[in-house]
Every structure is written in structure tokens, then in C-alpha cells.
Image: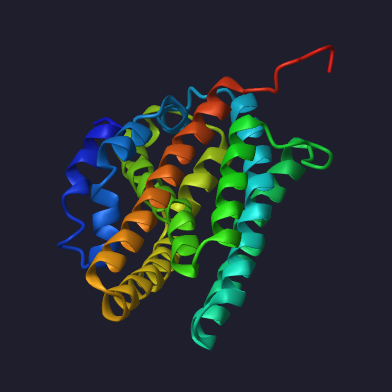
Length: 255
């Protein structure tokens, strides 16, 4: 069974799994894009073991750079949160990105004897981080939450699909242990719990908008949240595409 087939089977079950309605609406607005992301060769080749380790190393370095900015965005949202509970949880999410996800990356660096120090963000990474930082710093709090949601939810969804496909392949293929560790993290129960907590926070903001704003204004604000969610989903796809091709900055004028 392909990863894309599993994704197709899962995608219609979100309402049944008690996901928040607003988040489900965001997801449904870009199902085709998420399906294409689940079919991405970088991910499928991770599972079947055919992805060259150099591509995964490139990805991990770029992702470490991304996560630094992602953590900063979570801390900014913590400061703009409307209550202490959300502020504390957003700070915890930032710490989690550093202590869990970045710790995994650093363990890979040690195994490979490489470093992200002095490495610059490549084009699609910089595009993604610049976009999310702009939304978090210049738009209302709810839109900032929405722009970060795909980094939680799409990763969890893809991780679970990869986990299931790996189980079906069993011992028929061999892959580097780092691939398995990555799949275990993003397909695991701990990450799934964090995703649901973050989604609940996003949905609570949606409900506040619906409760406190006039219908036309509320509709416009939710559409903006959906637009940022869609753009981040697109940038997630582009991030993996960058890693598959090991994209570099073009040389212009010898520089």
C-alpha cells in the first residue's frame, strides 16, 4: 500500500475523530495539496529506504534552522496570548521544539559529525520562515496561530502514514536508523497529543472570533486564517521538495 493510499483512507475521518470544526475546515480547504505532500518522493523514499542519506542530512540541517525561527514565533505568540494558560502552553511548545525536535537533530549531527553552525537557510526554508515570522509579528494572534498549525498537523499526519507503511513493509526493506527515529517522533503518540492541544487553541480563537465579531467580519478573519494555513501547507511541500533536490542559492555575479 502506498503512502498516498493511506492518506486517502484517513482524510475523511477527521470529523469522526472529534477534531475541532474550524481546523477541519482549514484542512478540507487544501486536501489536494496535503495529498500531494503525502505522496512526495522525499517521504516515500524515506520509508522504503531509497532516499540517499545526503538528502536527509541536508533536510535535517535546514529543519534545524527552521525550528529555531519556529520556536521564536511560538514565544512571540506566547506574549500576545489572551490568557495565562495559553501563554504558558505556547512557551512550553517552544521549549518542546528545542528539547525534543532539535535534540533529535543534534543527535543526528553527532552521529554524522556535521553541524548547522554557519549554514544559511536555503531559498524555500527562508521563504517559509520569513512568511511565518511576518504573519506572527504583523497580524492578529489568531492568524499567527493558524500559520504555524501545518508544522504541527501536517507533520503528525505524514508521520502516522509513514509509521503505518513502515509496519506493512516490515523487514522487507532496510533504512538508516535516523529515518526510523524521525518517523517514530512525528508518528508517535506524544507528538499527536501536542498537535491536538495546539489545534484546540486554534479552535478556541476561532470561536472567540465567531462570538465577538459581526458575521461579515468573523467570516473575513476566518478566511484569513485559512489562507495562512493553506500557504504554510504549500511551504511544507516546498520544504521537502528543496531537500529532495538539495536546492542551493544561485550564483550571481560570482557570489
